[in-house]
Length: 307
Image 1 (cartoon, rainbow, N blue to C red):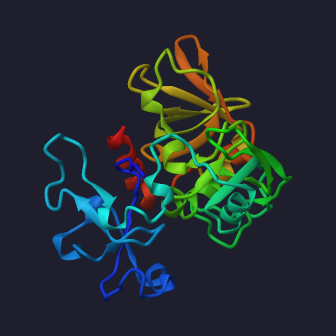
Image 2 (cartoon, rainbow, N blue to C red):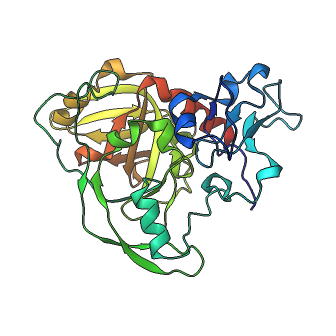
C-alpha cells in the first residue's frame, strides 16, 4: 500500500519498553506520549509507534529538520510492517473506502469513522461551557444521534450503505483535535469519507479559481468587527489580503470569539462566496465554526508546511 508523507500528525513515544505484537495496545494508548516530528529526538529512535495501527515508526530524517529535497520532516511506517493495514497509509485525498457495510459499520463503532449528517443549529445547553481558549470547561455534549445516512464508502465502485450519523459541531472536532486528525469523517455534502487531516483547507490557498463547494477551512484570525446584526471575523489570506466570516454575535459570545481572538486559528465549514473581490462566507449554525485550542495549533502549522 502506497503511503503519503506527512499523514501522521504525531507518534506515540514509549519510555518503557513496548513491543508491537506482544504487548497490549491499551498500554501504548495509556502510557504513550504524543510527539510531533519537530519534537522528536534521537533518544526516541526505536521507541515511537503509529497511533492507529501501533506498528513502529521512523522519522525522516533522523536529525535534520529538513530533508535534502527541502520537504519537512515527517514520520513514516517501517517497510517491515508494510502488510499491516493502516488508514494513514492511504494515498493523500483519495478518500477512505471500505470493503462492505459491516467493515464501515465497525469503523463507526470504533470511532475510526464519523458521519456528520448536519451541524448543530444552536448550542446544546444554556451553560457557558466553552472557555476563552476554546476548551470545554465542563462535561458537555457537542453531538447527538442523527438519522441513518446513505454514504458512498466504495471509493471506486460507488456503492452506498446506510450508516449511523451524528448531528455535531466543529467545536467537537477541536476537542482531542490531534486524535481526530487520524479519524475519517464524512461531512454534510461530502462525496466520500476522508481523513480529517486531508479535509482541512487552508484559507491562504484560496484563489480566484477556488470553487464554491463546502469545505472545512482553517485560517488565522487577523481582525474582528462588530456590526449591528452580524459580526465579521477577518481571516488571513495571501492572495486577497483577507477573508471575511459573517457570524452571529450570540454565538461568538458563547465561543469567546472577539477582538482578543486575533492571532488564534479558527476552523469553519462553509461554502466560498465573494464580496466584490474579497472571499467571504456566512456561518449560520452554532456547529459550523470554532476556535482551535492553542495547544493544537502546532498541527495546523504542520499542515500549512506540507501543502
